[in-house]
Image 1 (cartoon, rainbow, N blue to C red):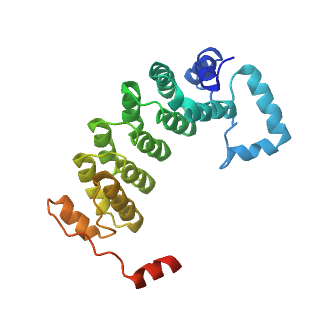
Image 2: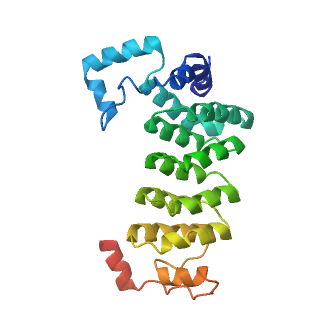
Image 3: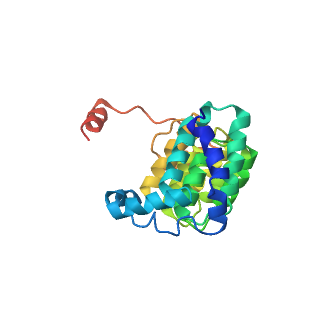
Length: 243
């Protein structure tokens, strides 16, 4: 019996996903319409439509389930199998029309790091859809090397706030001076939430702890050697416990 992960490649290649996607039919039937497409399962008429769709090829929901299983089990697979799956997913990603499905494919690549994945993420980082770019940030968190850091550094200047937030958060997974310097732009954001994420990522990336002082972190990134902040007083600790 095939494992769910191994079924993905066979289903993707032999059940018509590539053919459907290349013909522009995937997602065109409206199966994923709506703000919360999963809610459509409550409609008996829609369930009947899905049953008919299954006879013609894999539906949106079946594809999503397969991708979730790949993400759950991908880390347990041998390296060669992970790279084969990554290649299959990359092929589908290049012709997928649905932004929602492209984002899911990119998230799945996060558990399949390698050269093919990095090339695909480079393209996803410039996708027209912000959710796809945010998913690229998440996947780049686990893709080691200077090329991944460079892509994340570029995404800290993205037009979309959520993408910038994900880029700053993902840079914290990279332990390198380049990753720390890439967070300088996020540290200068006007949005306090991104600033906070940037400082948390700097702490993770550098091993230093300058708390939530953007000024002190800027000094450090500028080549200084600032004194770590004093530990909080008992009164401050008490306030933190209550608030």
